[in-house]
Length: 219
Figure: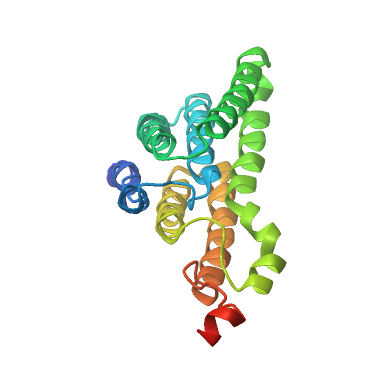
């Protein structure tokens, strides 16, 4: 009885904290409004978040995890607002629309598969697909480590997004342990390691650090 109450408390806390953490990108949005341009922010950060929310919402339904469904249902709504703001302040609106359209098609394909596939295997296969996509979206900036070291400038996820991801991974790790779900545990463990590595690179090579040209030095 006490253990069940503890699991529900952890689940509720993780859900509330996750929903609250989704407001972290407001710091990025504030910077976008201040500069009246979103072109300095990587579009993949917002598109990827929306894409992940659509898949995780479905995964929560398949695994019968109401907390996951609620959190990522909210994520769909909130990230849509962020993406709308990004589009409004972008000087490349057609490119933004094209990328969102392609991402939406991908989401439809994966979601359709989850409805077509046999119920006996979809509860295993779909979460595996989601895990691969989720971790790829989080870890893609690490593919440009050489470029980051060369330019001494981080061009991946913004700091608020990384800190947000790290905190959420820790919360969901606790949640996965309590509900004894190895799928979510694996997803969060690897995502936490990838996010910590990126935050380390961001600290070493801040986004604001721009190489000073020789002509600027002479002036």
